[in-house]
Every structure is written in structure tokens, then in C-alpha cells.
View 1 (tube, rainbow, N blue to C red):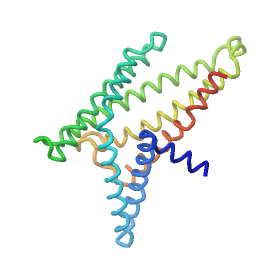
View 2 (view 1 turned 90 degrees about the horizontal axis):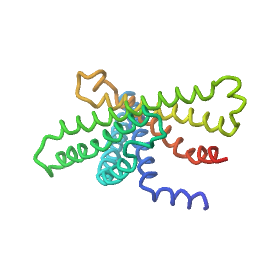
View 3 (view 1 turned 180 degrees about the vertical axis):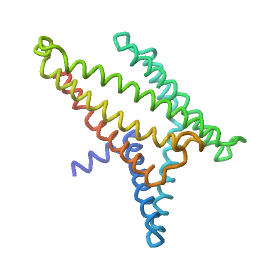
View 4 (view 1 turned 90 degrees about the vertical axis):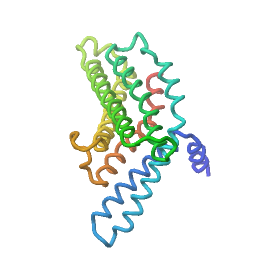
Length: 240
């Protein structure tokens, strides 16, 4: 009963609920895409799963209508970044925050056009929002690569410096390195899907079958869920 109570409490959080729906939606697309390709016998079930995946994606789009203020508050709080932070990391973070901030209104306009709330074509706005999302992911990947490079330098110092590095500090750096690697892989999977949803003619845009989109999205969602669950572990290691 305690586990059920904890799960119910967690699902009351919009962020946790969105993470769960994201994973479920991409999983349905993965399984549905595989079943559709297996032939007529299972294509009907596969089609239903793909339809469910589409509805879950739509649900998340509607939910993001309320994310602008939270994103603006985060962007304003971060500003140009802490002065003691690496300059390249700050630069990538500021650009990423800007791309994320612009993503939301473009998606909202696209959604409003699809629902005939505004007399506009939705396709250009969907393309623009996807481009901002892809830009944010690319910047995040560049940021992770830079951070990983810096962390590896910390783990491979000279013998004299290495002997002075506390064990707790070394464990914290190793965990942060693994976290950045997992975040990079998650963002890379999302970036592959983002390019797929751009207009045809741009790299591999429009070439992914549904099951591959579902597979990449599921991998990304599971990695992000794992990182979220282990976030407290890093905090405990750093403060120990």
C-alpha cells in the first residue's frame, strides 16, 4: 500500500505525469509500428496503438500550453549564468534557453491553427517549433560534450593532484560524467526524431518508419526517467 501511495503522490506532479505519458506514447508507437509492418493479421492492433500514441502526443501538446511562464521564470533566473560557471557552458545554456523560450509560442500558434482558433496555416509554425527544438537539443549536446571533456580532465590529473582528490569528490565527478553521457544519448535520440519531423529534403527528414521514431523516443524517455530518479543520488554524493 505504501508503494501505491507513493506512486499516486508522484503522479500528481505534472512533470512526472508528462514523463510517464511521453514514455507510454513512444512505446505505443514502437509496438504499433512493428505490428503494422508484420502484416494484415496484426496491423489492426498496430493501427490502434499508433492512434493511441497520436492522442497521447496531442495531450502533451495541450499540456505545454501552460509551460511558457515556467520557462520564462527559469530563463530569467538563469540570466547569463553564474559567473563562476565555464564560459562556454554559460553561452550554450543561454542560447538553449532562448531556443526553448521561442519553441513554446511557435507550437502554441501551430496548435491554434490546427484547431481553427486562428486563420493561419499550421505547417510553417510546426516546422519553426521543431527547428527551435532541434536547435535546443544540438546546443545541449554541445554543452554535454564540453562538460564531459572538462570532467575527464578532472579525473586524469597529474599523480600529485590525483592523490589529493577526495574519494567523495571523485565519485561525484564520475557520476556527473555518467549523467552527462546519458543526457547526451537522450538528446541525440530526440534530435534524430526532430530532424525526421522537419520538411522533406533536410537530412533524413521524413524517412523514419513509425517503429524507429517510437524506439528513439522510448530510449530517450527511459534515459531521462532514470536520470530524474537518480538526481537525488548525485546531490547526496556531492554533499557527503
